[in-house]
Image (cartoon, rainbow, N blue to C red):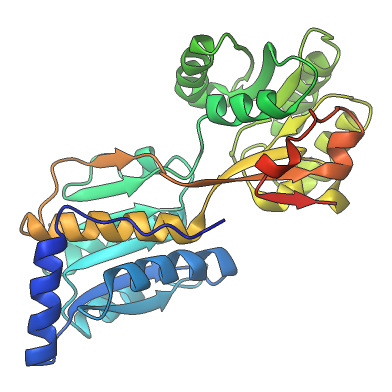
Length: 322
């Protein structure tokens, strides 16, 4: 897939700034808090290449050991105009560090976090891009390549994420897809609650597919090994996931995924950064945007075991894993 670069409404401002940087030898500094990893590198690359030489990105690679003290120290070593925080841990570190930065209104650009809307809730001067693709987007794409119908789809969720289910169900209804929910109380043991819901879902022959919610409450190595894989090994319908690692054929779990294009996500973030600068480093919000560019990933081995592909549809998939 071609990498798309987005042109911001602040393009004229950017050109002026770039010329100023060439004359004065200065660049607008951005502090980037991000974990190590290929997907975060790709998003950062999208930001850097889209912003160009008039901006300087300074990185703090965060881990479980990184503290708010580290973030504050990194902030004070320069003069950043904005902080980019990638993933929930980085966002949480920013929230903890912000009051100690000397400028509690420093703008935040948050991305690649689970429920990023909740992660930035209550924050002033914050903008975010959702990482989760709406279920309806994935299901419509799945329906377009499958020979069998996609009419009723199951989703297991914990009670505190009921708003996620209801919002997705509403969107799916517009496309004549019924999203059927299995709610697990937050107080329940994740293993027993997930097992009961998954057994109930997979025994319902009217369910055409399963959407797996990005939620660490249900997605960890132990539950994958002891609940998801044993139960789903006897199920013959597609499993929709929201993380590329879960759609790998060797895992025998996810069948299909629609995911953000990480480079394009960075390019989209760069456009928003330019807009924020043009507005005097102010954001009305918090504001949460949807990802503009996505990639479709198909586990062909898993797909063939449960479904049939419509003729000529393989060309519509961005990445096919055999």
